[in-house]
Image (cartoon, one colour):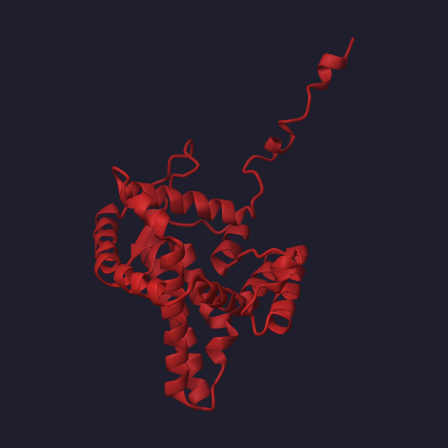
Length: 265
């Protein structure tokens, strides 16, 4: 019975995301981004987005920021690093599935090797042993998978607490939640314990991320127009993640080669 309940919750996450997609995709065709600007993205709901941006700034200023400051004060950097490595290792199964769905066998193999090494040698992921062995971390999610499959991102959105996203990434986050093994894991058959673990994971992730991004957030807030700056950062970063670090224009791969015509006589 409890397993069925967890299944319903996971399906509901996907349905909520799908509803948001259906609501927002209508704006895609009417408000195209500036193709000359690689960091641009359609923003037809800017009024709503700015309100959510202001709301999220308030949450950060009066709740998350102070909580992260207290967390940083009482938690040594070594402990925060171990928590960060542990939480990142928990995402490996989701990353692996998306590597496979994107037909990236080399990256999928790296993810599998990293998870195996870090879960064993790294003591349940508390230490990123794989990184020290030269197997570097990379991140994937179903939003990126949809992009690889040719699904358009849709318009820019700013959601309460969640922050910047798009219909594609919002739907993708619901799917990632559904395929995360921890969504289906039962701890001693105790629903309350499962809920506490899920909340604890979310809180620790938020606090660790807020501490890690402290300098970037200060720089963002110092911009003349933080909203526009965040929109550009989000769009550019997502495009880079989708390309897996590859140049946007493959001709850039050869730009440092000499002009062989100059050797012709």
